[in-house]
Image 1 (cartoon, protein in one colour):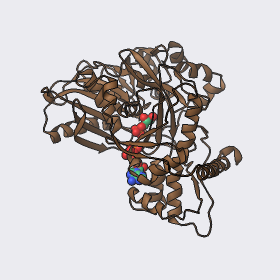
Image 2 (cartoon, protein in one colour):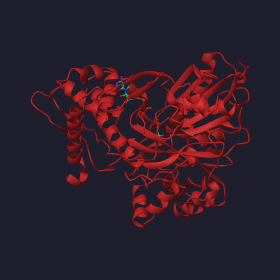
Image 3 (cartoon, rainbow, N blue to C red):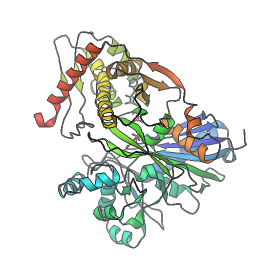
Image 4 (cartoon, rainbow, N blue to C red):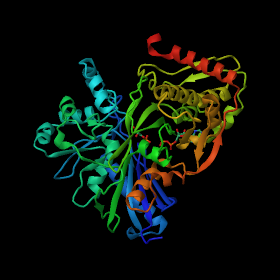
Length: 501
Ligand SMILES: Nc1ncnc2c1ncn2[C@@H]1O[C@H](COP(=O)(O)OP(=O)(O)O)[C@@H](O)[C@H]1O
Ligand SMILES: O=P(O)(O)OC[C@H](O)CO
């Protein structure tokens, strides 16, 4: 192994920052460090992060992972960054000081601005160029909000004094010698300002969203030279960047068209690789860039479920039925098989394919006999049913576009530790669910990008062969029972949609 045969992955997520050191070429994890940081909620629907928390937690975990492994910067061939996407930062190019706290992807403060743009008839062109919907989720209206809210910011931006970046870009700027202002194509694709066909910023959209194009970073491949950092006590290059869900798609080796991964954390994000083809969804899934390597873009369709592991948190913290998330499966297993309780966890509305932000949660089928085990089962099953809605929408959009073959779902994220949930997922999908050995797929994807650029990891086809199955869950529910259960869910959802109230 060469002296510098390790790569360092930095996974800057919504609630915590993680660093994992890997030994190449097989990408064996050798040390991990993690820090949580504060969430700020200054008003209803507003979510912010302190930029210094993002920066300091990143530095701390990288240094800690290095120390734990007993390695020196000279042992590290490169750093790969994966990050919470869409979250927007604006900073002063001279002082490096952010003009405002980071506005997080979950933040809804620009809902009114988005509605006005939709009503003015811009949705079709925006979807055509960016693959996205006009929604506060994405960066553009957050940037404009900061420029309008911070005194003097618009003028400073017009003078070229301010820079915008998603979290990757902000960290890169802070990390690198010479202050590199760059991002990768997957992060650029989440701003509402990027033309995903041409692979460049769109001047017309910058004008529409009132974001000066001079503020935007240079867009590079996911595996590229992003500059060199000295913050670890020796010079180490940054060689990879991708949005976290895209990094997980790489980490799951979903590299052929039709391959799907779903990451189950607080919510769930599913991406299906669509190859070089841009697929426009008929079910309001997003069209986005899965990765860009060697100047070639691979696309994906993406859908989100807002409440996945959060339903388990609700069992624990809201209902106090369990003390630990890990108890949920055993409790659900004690539910009476004949009971049919449905929880529609629309705690913050419903995502794909309903996009109903006004809907709120509901429980159906309560009887005098309903108890904690039935609630636990309904919460875990709701994750399976919602995935089924999402995958059904994806399959309909993809019909005829990929070779017919066995549909398999690759899963990762904290919630896939639940065997009970994974078995129900396979049952209700009527398809195998594959759980890999390495479940930190986001960090793995970032590490792979750095290893690829350093020439230490194989090309994608070779990397895909390293993917290792830990357990396959096979569907065991009879088709009739599955159909009856799923139809019950659909009825429950129909009754929950806000238009019914
Ligand atoms: N054994 C388990 N059974 C069910 N849910 C679990 C289990 N372990 C963790 N979870 C759920 O997974 C989520 C944590 O996953 P993680 O990937 O760390 O999420 P995030 O990155 O969104 O913080 C929590 O919502 C938790 O309730
Ligand atoms: O940080 P996570 O894992 O919650 O992921 C957030 C997504 O990137 C938001 O689009």
